[in-house]
Length: 366
Image 1: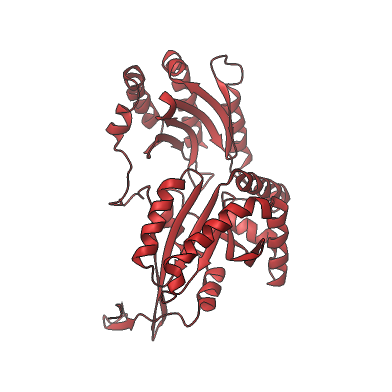
Image 2: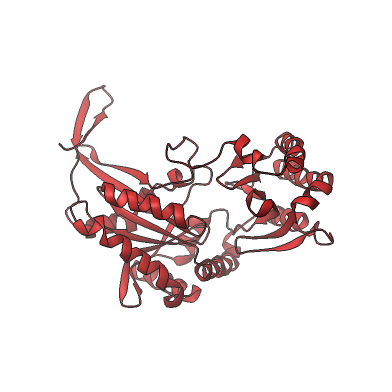
């Protein structure tokens, strides 16, 4: 039986709309290309909703072509394969197909390849690539767009070389077999390759077509909760650290929250972030990992188009650690910063707390 939804008009009368399959895979593919917001990036990242920009349809990968190549605001290449629910290929072969794509893209593409493909496709569609990039990034002044574009594509190249990708299966009906595969692969590859499925259903009606999206396969729970999530509770995460580390973390967390910071508890780490009225999303300043006996990163993630005051604060915060002998440099494509081991974290906790909380307070005041 086909699903129904009901639209209530201004007079309170209900108008039923019955689910209708997409006529062709191409029609669904074109819809996603024109409206990538249907991929429900706010469900994938409730705290930092993902937005996408179309690079091109049918992007060549060796002898294949992926249906859609998108890029999110963090320069993560997102490969999208679109299948109708009645296509039995969507049940099994498409998973292997996408894994083949993921294994080949680093050799097949480069940052320049993706940039040229985007600019040519935008020109073909009669669009301004700079305006599309500004819409994706937000908060980028027109005079800074060239610099922001260079930084954006440089980071995209780094992500590509590191194998940091997102694979999305899109259909009007995600079968159980595909859902099971997506959950499995996402759990195995989450650190670098995110694997998800998005179900997009349409309900034509007299007021237009209603479109409803559902994200499938997440293993890190969104804010609203996810019954399949293997995330640990705050207490479970804290218990994973050494007793002396846990003892100093509790007052540190109190200080962070008093300074206006936010704590997020993930599968293997606790993240610290701040907010500023000059920037729409959160700004990450630290990550405390339970792995390797405890790994403590003090960083300020890259964000294209940061206002000058925030960029200055970013450099000042990271620069405070540069003369410390108890730290080592962090080598991550999404930010610069420093790493402290458990022993030095405990020994220098007052210094680290002061720097982190001072920066959080300054962020809140900007």
